[in-house]
Length: 107
Length: 399
Image 1: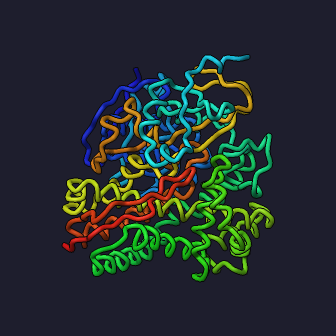
Image 2 (image 1 turned 60 degrees about the vertical axis):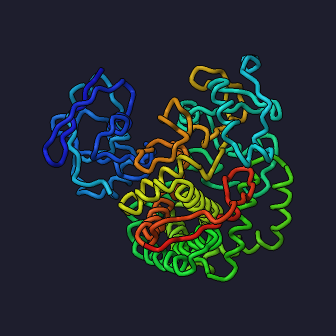
Image 3 (image 1 turned 45 degrees about the vertical axis):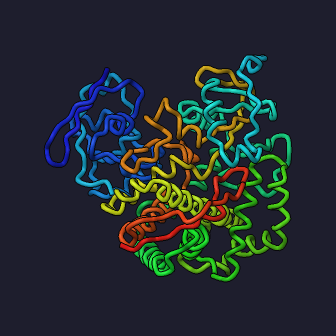
């Protein structure tokens, strides 16, 4: 199973194994990870599952769709070029080892 | 193809009074009978009660369409009673176009702009309730709050707003069968339709409000000027009755669970999760339908073209396969993934506003009220789609 490396705003780290096809947000909220809220449940409607994708991985994700881009303008923490909504990142074997940084706040 | 004949069949009528009053035994029976079931009183539909299947149907908008209606009626076979909604009862690419406009107007960023106003009104209304002490949780708070703040934000004048309640009651009843509830709701309509459509016109909408912003999108060419009033209508039909009952159900949940209210009072920052959990535990919108666009399947179960698919949202929200101790109202639960707002491309476009309303009202209560006591039996307002209270007698004990 692919692994995701989360780095909290305070620098603490946590790794989670994921089934393929699950979204990063689903995996994170399912495991009770602090720092990802996922209020809308994955409909790209709330911008509370915001993550910063590590530079080394940013280019490996499919480009965001228009609804995600629109919602990225609504993040509570600063939007960076590597900002994504984790509900829109579907885990695949190719993403095994991906590093995601969490913003200081989601709301 | 005749595969649907092998599905489990149950005798439940989701629209019978006993099931509207207490849907949970029916939900459990549907969930336990199988992932997809048939209901004998409605042979043209299949029903899903488990979270996995409800989620799967709502997230497969190519196979399970909304354009043939999201209630029991199949618009491929019968004429809708009103011009079809351009967002609720539409599919891509039309839906994408209208949804883009509405989701921008109602985005979390836009909601930040109305937050202070919504919070101030919540504080005032809760303060008045605390002074009264003995209140009806529905008439004195859950109903008047959304009826004030949301039409204000849309830009609708104060006079005649009770028409929005009559209209909402009809719209959500119309998604069920032609039963006595629908007949009674239709009787009350009278001149209400005319009032609603008049208030969808630009000259009746305050410049800068959500309604006027729809017309600005039409000015910009994103949608047509003919589409604009029907999109304003979506605000008026979907934005009031839903939040009224969301708030009413949250008050009910907190009044029934004194220990949960005590936690909220001790930490008002729990207001938002307390509202969210109430949406899961007692879902306002109980049901929505889709229609199979072709012979397809739901998690491997074959479904024939043109079959109506009943998604029991409230049942999915208490599915033990998804939620530990699903019948427990627990404000510290993280209920992300509940189906109360639907899911997928038709997920409630106003959910950021709804959450704001829930959060600010419960925050005001948490700060001003030490305890909520139930002072008498509550009564229900039966509706074919909504879980609604008519009365909720409460005593607020000030902090």
